[in-house]
Structures are given as structure tokens and as C-alpha cells.
Image (cartoon, rainbow, N blue to C red; front, side, top):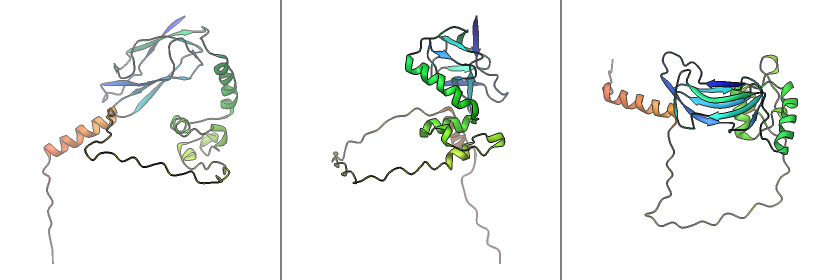
Length: 199
């Protein structure tokens, strides 16, 4: 049965959002409550999860596209078998068993993925043993064996004075909103400092 995946209902102060990241591609098998897509608004990144076990049938809005509240972003086929490779299937089988006992907050899950830390290695201090963002930030991995010899320093490449390596990176919606507000404040307020000395 085909199900519509829609953007969440945004708060009154948020007009629209944009697709930040698709975690699954068309034809991939998805488990219930597994993240499908991140939608970034001016204030927060919202995570849309799978309503049931099935397959992502069609992506209607690609990364970077603007979406409105409750707008259709994808089609989902419930109960269908997806195209997954054998290693992915083994990984999918072991992940639910490991994560069944572990409770991880969304912010902590993101930090775990960014740092490449296994959730089983972190001890949760949140309510009911939930792994929080602070737990991940304070996590100290087991001492790794010290390297026997320091690697040789990388050779320094002399670049001509006139050439610089530049890379343009698109601003996130949050950064763009901050820049707009700072510019607005610069234009609408008097930028001055007053000193009053009293004896």
C-alpha cells in the first residue's frame, strides 16, 4: 500500500523549510521509525521518519528544494521488500538487536554519527538510561596504543602569493536568517556608544 510522506506541520512563525538530507534513496528498505529525510527551517532541523517497514518508492522533493507545511515530499510503499545488499542486510539485522536496548536522543545520535562512535560504548545518564548529547560530548574512548614513531611532517607546498584556494559553501537557512537579522539591526539602529561619568 502506497503512503504519502509529507513535511511536518510547521509552527505559525515558520513559513517554509528546505530539504537538508535524504537518509534513504529510492528502492532502499526502511524500518519503522528510521529517519528518511531532514527538513531544515529557520529555527530547527526536523526529522521525518518512516511510518512502517517498507521501501522508499519515489522522492518528490530533492535536496535543497523548498517545502511548505504538510507538503508531499515522497511516496512510501509499506511492507515491500527493498533492494539491499547482503552486507547491508547483516548490518540491518545486527543494528535493531543492538539498538533495542539502547535509547539515544536525536541530537546524541547525530553526534555519534559525526564522531563515528558506537552507541553501545557510551553510557547513558539521561532519564531511563537515555544517551544524551552531553554523554557523547563527555565520552572518552578506550586508550588506543601509542604510536611507535611520529610520522614525518608533510612537505610544505609554496604557493604563489597571488593565488589562494577558496571554497564557497552554501549557507544553511539558520545562518542566512542570522545574517539577515544582523544586517537589519545595522540598518535600523544607531551604532554609537555613550559614556556618562559621575563624580
